[in-house]
Length: 208
Ligand SMILES: [Cu+2]
Image (cartoon, rainbow, N blue to C red; front, top):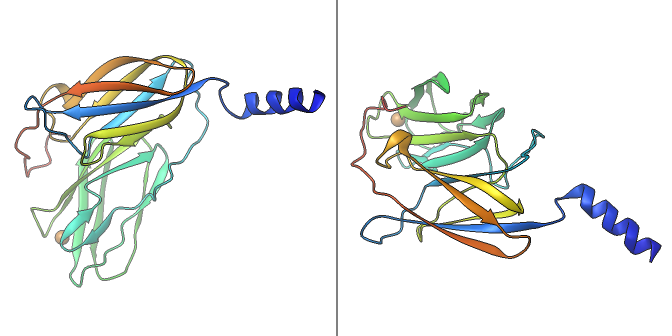
């Protein structure tokens, strides 16, 4: 019994005692799913402890494209930019959240950039105008990207009211974002629906 009590005390310290998942589905007004949206959940009492995501902080150039199109990284993350193409790329951003430039480099060479402010960083290539990608720098560990089915699953959110922000680089509306409130259950999954429409992508990266 004493063992069980100390086990419970330990798990309470390690993670919120009551936490649920949020499954957010983003569709357009025709009911079609929207992938590559970033869903950021801010529960009440969100801490400032450092965190990391299970995916790599990596924006590759492969097949004359950036991969992935949208990358979520924690604030303060160092992102690598490996080039797997047999040609040179010249990666840059003029975004307020991070302005940088990685001068021409060639196959397999890797450069790193630190992203120290939350926000949207639009990435382009000076040589190939149609190359476009986005890094969303976030200050919440409760963030995920929607898949091709429009669903983003955020696990282990402390129970209670939470703010949910959905962002996609081509979403119509203010800052490309939709803000919702959700009630996170003490266990199990809250299903949340969001609706938005995409505009035609702009090749100039001036929006951010
Ligand atoms: Cu390029």
